[in-house]
Image (cartoon, rainbow, N blue to C red):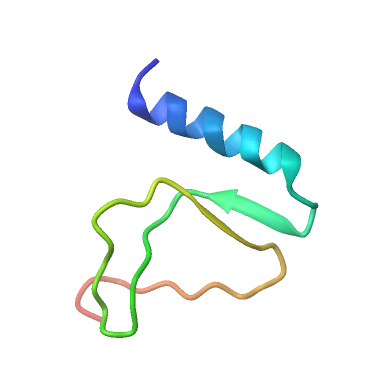
Length: 58
């Protein structure tokens, strides 16, 4: 298996153990200063929480 395949499998398996109100998604963590974390394969978030997205140069 390649990296993306393994990451997808891990996200899928983790989601099986979480209550329905949570999602496991791929993404990046950005701090309040706009700095992006070097590595982030997945994040666990509330299904009903509004997520904010940022575009480059925003």
